[in-house]
Image (cartoon, rainbow, N blue to C red; front, side):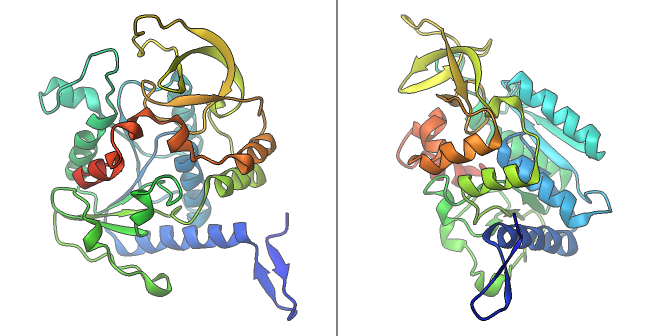
Length: 310
């Protein structure tokens, strides 16, 4: 597909996809040029994979000039950890891992071990500790505005105070793509290069660029459990409730997170092009359709963001 289109006036303009790529590359380079210790959050999910792909293009032929940070709940899908390690080896990246288990063992957080328990919310403590220990002043995240209404309030540069907390009233204007990264010692900026992308944009880019993803994103057969209107993968991390019985289904994941709260959808889409067609017809965002942790309350995501969540 051409990266340029010719207007009626005879001038050449970037295609929608190329314009999104150019904006994200600009943001990545802006941070690398103005911050002392940036880090890129990497979960192995499609958004962080695309963000890393953009970083490799932004600084090519030089290596990516900052480390990647994985906040590890210990309840990951095995396929995602395998993929993460393959990507680190492929690009020669410096991988940092913040482990939720370390915070549980140290008594900084308490794990809910009930049948509906999840470590997802505990990630906030681990993330803030990792940022503090690494003295990072800019943290790249793969969040997009179309995912969830609290994330729609985000700017590209999201200011966080010395406690890592987010206040939507303290968001800074970003007119003409000018970004204000001013902060005091102990504060930091969350940076979202994919803010203006949609799920369809992400998949169209994956298809066009031939980006590899964990196999979870494509149709495959696996045992699942139906719970609260979602299909959850039956893994060693999921405790069954009374009356629940695993069944095999042909499914794929639209988003990948903690295995205890990330649902899948029935699908036959086995290639990027087939996923693009499926996403184009979807009317619910991937988080709305498949993330149990977003169903805690109407303002669940915003509450967690105020505490320092992604």
